[in-house]
Length: 150
Image (cartoon, rainbow, N blue to C red):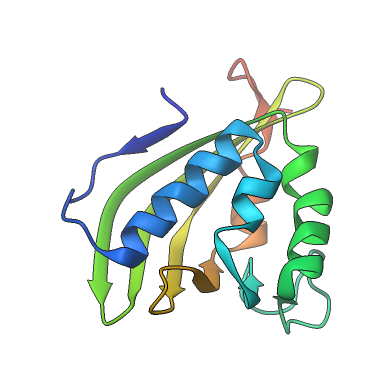
């Protein structure tokens, strides 16, 4: 599988384009390129609501917090593979449906199914990223990357 497998519509839309750039930057480990895709006052909710990643459930606001989110989450993953099976636009937003396959240290893999909603401003910068996925479901897929369970 390539780093970003796109099986959804190819119709151009500013939010869809930004989401694809975001996935590409993450898959390549391009932190500053990824942060630059976000408006200075952007917010990331990944996952939406309270979680070990975001105990307050209020999201990560602004570039400094977005960089800290990267360091706490993205930087801990050895490899990402994004598989987007559908994508819907409305207004200045896109909702991508798919699975993020993460390869973790120790030859471990986890698959996160979800709906990933990006909203952009008139300048095309991401003002909001809201990822709807369930921690327990994702953790339930944790296994050896070669396919055996833990």
